[in-house]
Image 1: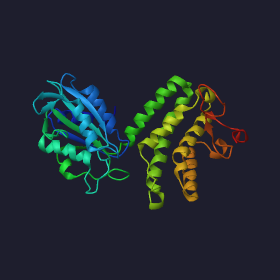
Image 2 (image 1 turned 135 degrees about the horizontal axis):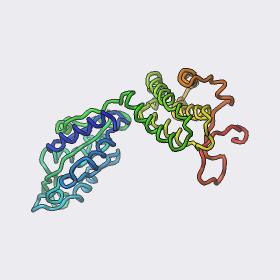
Image 3 (image 1 turned 90 degrees about the horizontal axis):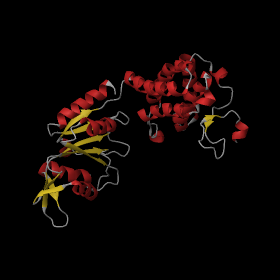
Image 4 (image 1 turned 30 degrees about the horizontal axis):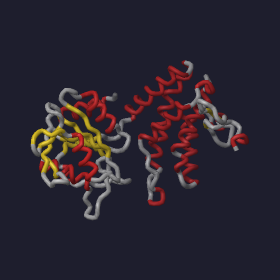
Length: 328
């Protein structure tokens, strides 16, 4: 929990308990889905509110959306449907702006939801009779348009209270990743290795911010888009390594960190000037943050970590590979 996520949960609860719809907007990796799911599953009164989860994709159709929601409804009386008596459904729609537009630029799954927003129901496709649906409300999450996400019509957005999830502050990111890494170190490594936690958090944030600032997407490099998930993968990779092979050897852990940065950021770069720039940044950070000389730290041409050197091993151990000839 960060102070931001506590604030979002508080606002989300207070708006939704007034039966107002909430739309969470923000870039990838800012915790929209996590915050909303956590709130709906554990933070609301289960005697009153029942969460339903829908995830939109580019292939989602209006009929699918209608059938999923109709399948959850009980009949109250003729032509009126809703959740079981005494309950209210809180329907969470993730990636709401993902459905593809049709020929007239509408998004059919969103239009069926807009029909409920405007008219409190939709039509049964078999008997062509309007079904009124009561005691439901919507919470949705979506990222900014681009990369498969569409612009959503204002006729639908006007029904929502918008809650912005901006990029996390460096302080929050350091707190989150620092706590995760500390818990891992406490269990698997000797106490001397804990001295690396702060430098790794600082260096990871630095390399992430430098890539965001310098490696901008262009028409020929449209995949140069980095988000918080890339930063999380650095720590995920560092925690995959076999602690027994590292022991108290801080240089191995620093090489592991550098290897994860190369796999996540450098492998995405398409031309040599960009790769050279990245290598320079990595060497500078090792010197600034870890107070180590790159040439003394890395004695081979390239850093390799992998879990494929022992065929058929169970469990497969992720460790450093020093013998390049054996790797080939």
